[in-house]
View 1 (cartoon, helix red, strand yellow):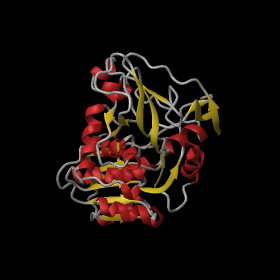
View 2 (spheres, rainbow, N blue to C red):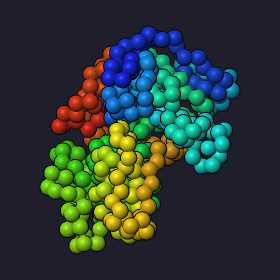
View 3 (cartoon, rainbow, N blue to C red):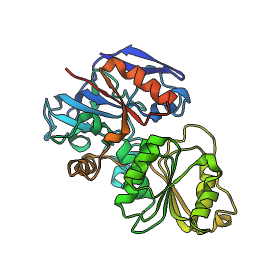
Length: 353
């Protein structure tokens, strides 16, 4: 089979591999919709997870099952399925501790294009199909459903980690696709004022649609100073970091109230240390929590997130700014994520058979 792979750090290309083998609990799928991610760019061009050789990329997909293992009970050949980016081993001790995304070790649930071949191929493997897959609901566009693989669950997890609750002031740093979903997640959890940091006109417009009440441009000066001006020196209750780098934490800490929470769902692709300003952090005693987390997954969570789309409470269509057809267009779509033209939010690829 053909797949689009990281050949080595800084280089991508097509490779030929055997079709993956299906274990008794597993499924083999072929993609019907795919979406490249900035994480793929960090992995390939920054070497963020180390060297990989001929590893097929991609972790956002909707698929059609072509084979199931003999112990799979709830799925069959021909089913169209939502494929989460994170596919844990549910029997692992880490899963039993409540951290399935780290099954087998830190980030161990993130298998696609990390520990095993990803979804940018003619066929891909999903472990523990009954626990990790979910049926594509009727009436949901597969292209839009790719956002349920990573963008929606990761963005919403930012609001979960921040423990956003009714009426709180929330700052979302970065309004790419993950940040946009953090804005929506915070709004659904009852946030009062939502300050969103970004400059691209299409992202700003969509952030407002999703619930942002204020837009901050990092081009107009330090984020924390603008936050303090907007909040009359009080700061915000919660901060969600969905963009930026290791320096972004400085402005986050300076923006949040004592006792607040800073959650990070941004893939930090480079830098040796996260920077925390000592004095603004209350010289270590400000009761300001900083927590970062990889998105949870699993069938039940995926079904619940899909239900938000089914009921009309979540509309992701505005995020799909660039649309392609056919597996061969993966390279072009991935290059868009690398170059990030000003009108890009998210590219998506549909595949017909």
